[in-house]
Structures are given as C-alpha cells and as structure tokens.
Length: 461
Ligand SMILES: *Cc1c(COP(=O)(O)O)cnc(C)c1O
Figure (cartoon, rainbow, N blue to C red):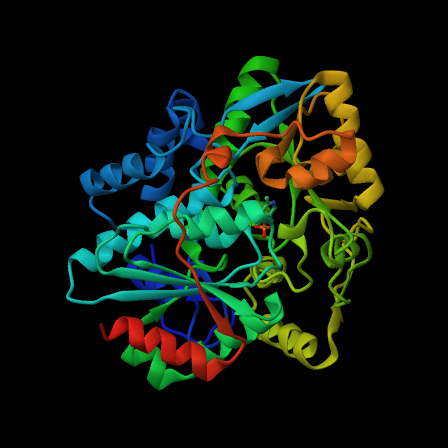
C-alpha cells in the first residue's frame, strides 16, 4: 500500500515513510491510496482473536514481512491486562467497548503501544536515532511514554504544563524513570507547551540535526491500529444479537478514534451510523448538524482529553467527502486558516452526512449520566465515556445494537466521579501503586531557547 497526501502535493510514499514522517510534506495528511474492500473476508475474521484480527487488518496496509508483523502485534498487545485486549460488555440495552485495559488505562494505548514497536522495528535496521518531542495536557503523554520506554534508539521528551494536570496524570508520566524518558514540566499553560513544540518542529535545522519525531494523532499508524477494535466489537455484538448491523458512539476530540470507525465501515464493516459525541467543545457536533465548521474558544471541561477546537484529523474526512478532490481540500483548509470557518453543502437528502450524526453533552448531562449508570447498573463511566453514552443513547435504533466506546478507566478521572456520585470510588491498583514511587521530571520556564538547550544538553551526553 502506498500513501498520498490529502492536499495532492506529494508522490506516493511507502508505509515506512508514512509512519516515520507522520505528516505529508505539502502540509496535508497522509491517506492510503485506496481503502481495501474486506467484505468477503468478514466470515473468516469473525473467528479470530484480537491479535490475529489486528494482523489481518494491518497486513492490508503495510509491507512488513508477515512473521515480523505478527511478532510486532503480539508484543504490542501482551501489555494489556486482558487477552481480549478490548472487551465488550453489555450494559442495559447497549454495549460498552472497553478500550482502557492498556498500561495507562486510556484508549490511546491501543495505538501507541503499536506505534512504539513500529518505530523500534524500523530503527533497528538503521543507524538512526529518533527523538520524540510531545506536548500533553494529560493522556497522550503517558500513553506515548509507555509506548517507547526502555526502547533502543528512541528518546522521548514530553512537555506538560507544570501544576496544571491532574496528580494522577502527572504521576503516570513522572514515575517512568527509564533513561530514554524526559519529563519536562513547563512553567506555563498547555498552549505554551504546544507553541514551543510547533516552534521546535519549524526549526528545520534543529529538527534534522536531532532527528526529531512526533507521535501525534495524525500519524497513520495510530488510525490503523484503531480500525481493529471496531471490527472486533461488531463481531462480538452481531454474534450475540444476530443483528446484521451495529452503530457506534464515539467521544471525540481530535477525530482520530471515530475516523478509524469510518475506515472500518469503508472496508466493509456493516454499520448504520457513527455517532459523534463532544463536550462543550462542540465544533464537530455543530458541523455535522449544520454543515458549518467554525472555530470557537476552548472550554475547560471535566472530559479534558476532548478539550480541543481544531480537530487535527478532520482534514481526512473532508478529503473523502469530496471523493479525493485535493484542490477542494486545499481551498477549504486555506479558507479555514484565514477566516476560521468554512461550510459544506448538505446532501440531497438534506442531511450533512449519511453516516455521521452528532450531539453534545454538557457538564451537567455528563455528571448525571455517570450517576445514573452507577446507581442503576453499578457501572462506572469515566467522564469521556459518559459523553459518548449520553449522546449515543439519543440515537438508539431497534435492530441496530449500539456500541459505546469507553475511552478511559474511571479511576483516571476520579475527581469527576467524586463530583458525580459524592464519593471517591473510582480506583485502580495500577494508579494506587504510583504513589510513593521515585519520579523524574525537570521544571523549565516556558521558553523556547531554554527548552532547546535542555534537549541539546540531554542528547549530547
Ligand atoms: C484522546 C481521548 C479522546 C478523544 O479521541 P480523539 O481521537 O482525539 O477524538 C477521548 N477520550 C479519551 C479518554 C482520550 O484520551
């Protein structure tokens, strides 16, 4: 499989290059040249374990020799606490797809465990080093650190805003004391961290000299790894209910998770709807309800991993919506960059999209949803998952079982749980065990030059 840019400005590149560069040189996002049709394979795929299914799907998009790909996938999912990797549980009239059984208890592990091993695989053939730089407001940082800790030829620098992330999130990162992991607490906000990150990558000389790399959610390998659980969950639920179709509700921020569902459906997965759920940062929900994509201010919410206004993967959706017309993608992205908005025409049916529907859960609805499912069904939803359940259950359709993606373990966001039900009952032994461990973190001012000097200093050692 070759990869091309949504903006049409590059020659096709191979899977390795797509994974290692992350982004297309023309400023666009990388997409596979074609989407393989797997509909005739589904009867076989139904019988497979999670790692076997992952192998069959990833094989279609990569050119890694089969034996090595198999090893790589097995290694990535052995770190999950259940052999099912992403189990499905029944809750009242719908299903929960639990994506939080990885090392950091959030769905990002599914992709980042795999990506870390992919990086290692490609680097082992070369003399190259990879120095990953990331900025995090919480979940991505720890999942990325756990993806590459202890790996040869890879070092990772993660900036987080000092004192502005939860104690649990901070400990999940700083308690990793491997020699290749550097935690930087930046004396500033998350925006400061992101600004510095952007500047570091814009400095081409510095970037090349130190072979800087990124792990952000636009990396194709992250989307690819996430396609697997859509199939896995649909097979489980269709088997149990004998339904011929399912629908998915996805708590959404950067549009990476739900985009994987879109690819799964394009590959032949029988699904009726993709239900996009946002918190008060509702740019995407507004888009799918009105056709207008317009940026607003970022709101701080109790589902912080979705506090995003500009969804970095959305450009891939636009690309498919216009059937691969890169000129149109360029035009819309340019308009968005200058005016902060653009609109698309509704379909003939009057809908904005025939597959996606969308809604928003505000703070009150999210807290009530957590309380309701705890009291009625004794099941604890984390606040992100609660957003998905609240919106998803507004789109129930008989004969099309609903699968709500659970993106984090509730113990990661115990403050919200306490607020919702009045006591702190969201615990996880992995998080309890973090307290009292040795930690490693350096506090630096929110200054590009200081952070550059720090990175150089560590890399020249
Ligand atoms: C990252 C994240 C999301 C949002 O996923 P996107 O791919 O950015 O849409 C939702 N929930 C949790 C817990 C996350 O960490």
